[in-house]
Length: 253
Image (cartoon, rainbow, N blue to C red):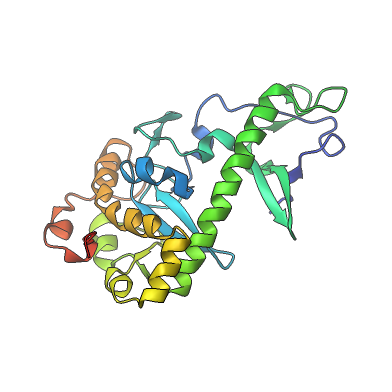
């Protein structure tokens, strides 16, 4: 795996980049990173899930039923309403080294060039306007992702994270592993102190949104027929949700 390009006048000397003209760069990403600030709009557009990467839990939007194919992108265009913030900041990323965050550029993005593209910095060592705009949005988003990961760590500590049901995998034809949701029964049985810790960490909105978003898997089935990849699209998911009491929350309890 190539080392990310650290964004600095020295490291970027003689290099340039090509701002994406469409969303083709994300066409192979079935899981899109999300932060808690996106919950309401994202949950109304796509199923949400929790995944574990490098020992840390992360919130993602499930945009496909197989790795390597994003059902929400066709011919470089986004097919649904809400577009995750990550799409507006890529290929710039923040890599944490110790307690320091470094702004980097993904060398694997296919958007790194030499003199033909747009320079990262001008002759005075100042970021170009396009880069500066993306980096500022990236920093804001990164802070929200950090807060989200802290909330997810509290959910994990409370032991309320559980894998997606195998029945949903089967009916959806899902070949992506490692997707998790919230165990509603375990959540309802938490003692007062633990439940309060979730509330203080602002983890409860994430818990509710993840489970309440799961019926959006219907959309994945429809998109799989509109924008097929390699897996056969599911015929019907109604039977999974018709009598499923595991996905309901009692907000008045």
